[in-house]
Length: 310
Image (cartoon, rainbow, N blue to C red; front, side):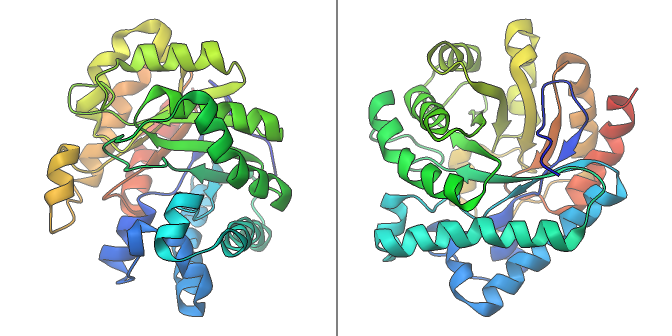
């Protein structure tokens, strides 16, 4: 059950835009965009379970592995404090997040691998890096959450929506300290560069140079049209193992101002994923981010999995 995704290996699916689905489709209120708060409410916990079950069923239908994320993207010390969680409460809710997805894995009884993943979000805003840490500071800051997840039984961690180099480096180092495999996923602007202006290729290379234990890299929270062109860099493309794109073509700034959810077109998004396969020899993980739901993941799987298995 714990066979991990690897570059160029058997395909895995992930879920979609957890927070946008919970807010816009299911009507939950998420303070600070924090889905972990639902673990403290029975109706919220059931809402999380219903969400995850849709994607586990899709992975079973498509005979793919599945990366099962805990609702932990905002469950780090600063964000927890902003919502009113002290360190003990936050540690408890992080552990319960891993326990919840472990129970869902047992319940589902998949014949294909299902891995328990801790998504680690940025200390600051997911679109704007704001005050930046050194790699050493980021390592120390994120070590606590990663350590809690390791003790609770997580199989791996993914640094999701990384906006700048040093935080990604620090998270990768903290994961290595805890003995957990790490994946680093950067987000990019409409020009394919990180919000700091650094190229994706440089960010990936420098993360690998500093934290050589990174299993592979991903791109998330951007539309394929924002980054497809930069995949012409063969060295970069060889290290990209996963894509979790937005449904919307909007920029981060436009998404911040949007009052309604832009769901894009699931079949069109699936076709855009399919068009990138030739450039990504190591691709092994397919999922979604903001604005996507189970329809998008189904369309992506239909478009890509047959070609990935040839």
